[in-house]
Amino acid sequence: MEERTQRVSLQTVESWLRDLGLKPLQSADRDGIRSWDIVIDGRVRLGVPMTLILDPSVGLVAWAQYAPPLADSLRKVYRQLLSWNDELPFVKFAIGEDGQPVLSDEVASANLTRDAVGLTIARLVAVCDLLYPESARWVDRVAKQDAAAGDAGIRLLERYADQLREFSA
Image (cartoon, rainbow, N blue to C red; front, side):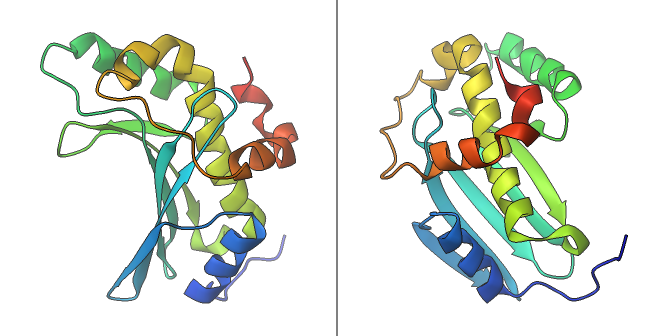
């Protein structure tokens, strides 16, 4: 297998996002690193806020804001997140500085392609859909997200359905 040595440009990733039907709400640059914020719907979970961060020398990290910040009384939720880390391949849950649960996946720079980015986003949406019935009570406790504009999330889930079988209910 031939290893990729060329860095992926910021413009290439933006082109891939357009090809995948994704419209970033905003983007930001700092020291050659770019981030894009999107909101995407799954089949069950609507309005998942997601951030993609590209450092062309390292790779791309995608993280979804899985739920509102956890109150101190929600230790059971934290234990559930740790359990899901063991059960679900590729993705990882963490707690951000503000106490907000996040779900992440990453693609190394050598493996960055349009389909790798699309599959990463689809994987996060698929996990949000899969776990929503178990977590709706605390995911929606502050305010249920409105649906995103468009059906890009559903199209991504369908496009990468074969690679997402382990995340099917």
